[in-house]
Image 1 (spheres, one colour):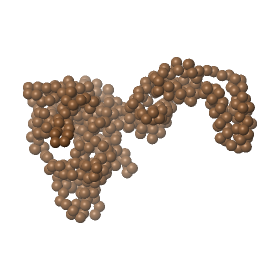
Image 2 (cartoon, rainbow, N blue to C red; image 1 turned 120 degrees about the vertical axis):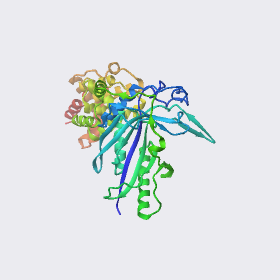
Image 3 (cartoon, helix red, strand yellow; image 1 turned 60 degrees about the horizontal axis):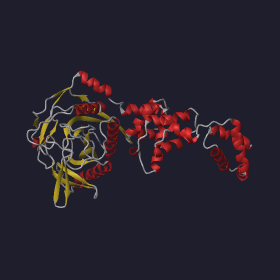
Image 4 (spheres, rainbow, N blue to C red; image 1 turned 180 degrees about the vertical axis):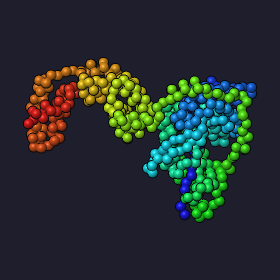
Length: 472
């Protein structure tokens, strides 16, 4: 029998805010020592009341707009009650009855075509702390407690692991480029709800939830293992499937049961009386819309029209630093296609040789634009431009001053260039003979010698033509 895979996702994304959702403690807890980013409010001390962070609402609405959601003008918070050592209040502040965003849609492209993934809702909530286990002891780190999250809940629209990874990759690119979240170091975590049913059936199968995965590779492996487990149970009656929560073990590549799947009733949700309802009026919504970044699909079309290749576009959209640098340099008057080549080939290549990435080095748009403009205007050739870029990366030099200092913009008249070419020809008789005997590599050697004598100065195309004429 053929079976169909049915998957829904709950994706938790840590928002890029300067402070936590309900207090003034720093929002980015990953770099802090244990429990040094904690106050009486986020550690659950008696009598402390939550104060809503306005920026969290704006980022949640922006995320909703990016995912084509309806924005709720009236939104409230609820308490989700359960006990765990890393939850100091014994409840989590989240949204059940009036989430901030509903009814979105995200087109996802895979090898099988495009599928529209429906977004059921986006809601705001606070994160829990973290347990650290050492020997027979367990320690609680509250740094992450009350860090702002949004949870994006999809309808069960996925039919393959490939679609899930494509969706998550797109989500990550959108949120990073839009300044919603860095989506790194556990800042993007996913719960996968999975079931299997006979192909053509409209009824859902028994659903299991695989909790708290942040690695795309682990998510793909977990889906493949769990779907096969379900199909084996249905086809060969290897086990009785039950609705439960499971965890994925990366070492074994298998999922293991944790507990029976909870229902809303198990959490005894009720409205949080300490937080007033949030009203999003027309003026506030229009301001958020005005600040919303360009949609990633629109950005891809813009880059395609500029002549940037699909492969380069994927690289640009997958790293918000690259996209931001590209857009900033283009805004200073540089050609988009050429700028993309400078960033993805030259700049990235220089960093790669030093074992670095763009996350390890920052070059200003003004600096890169200055180099590109000197090349485009003919003031220097591209080889000299790359030498300047290397000096910028390694020694943080001023590109214009360094160009003057090294004489890269020194001008040679045609007579002077011809004199240098004549000298190179007379000093390299063997290479000249080899070229005349049909060896093209000999010409490249002669051309390289000319450029060396000229110290990289001059238009390579002009020099190459003059050399060819001299050798005829």
